[in-house]
Length: 145
Image (cartoon, rainbow, N blue to C red; front, side, top):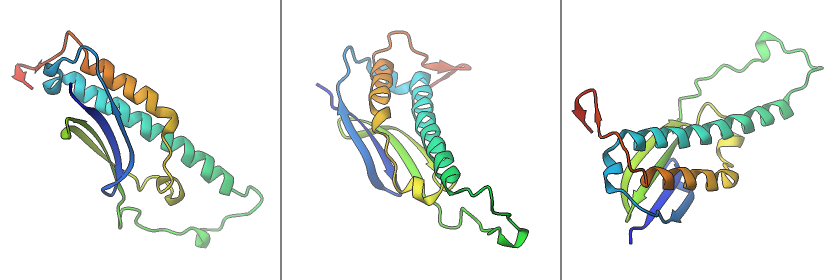
C-alpha cells in the first residue's frame, strides 16, 4: 500500500501536511500531463484563497476618510527578501511533483498566517481523482513525458 501526501511550505517550513490513500492507483499518472494540470489547479486554489484574504485584510486597513498624499506612499522592492511557497505531492516519502510560487504579492500578515483548512478536502479529492485516472496523456506534441 502506497503512502500519499501533500505538503505546503513557506521558506522550507511546513504549513500544512496531509496523508491520504488512493483507490485504483495508476502509476502511469506520475509521468502525465494530468499531474501537471492537477498541481497547477491546486496551487491556483491556494493562491486565490490568499488573494481573498489579502483583499479582506487590505480593506480592513483602508480609511476612506483619510486623504493620501504622494509623499505618504511607501515605495519599496517587495522582492528584496522573498518568501516562497512550495506545494509538493509525495508518494512513499518521495517527491513526485513540486510547484513554487512567490508569497511577496500578499501582505505579510496574510502570508505568515496561512490557513487552508477549508481547502484540504478539495485538494485531497482532486489529487486522489487524478491518481486514479484511467485515460491519461503521457505524450505531448510527439514527446513522451
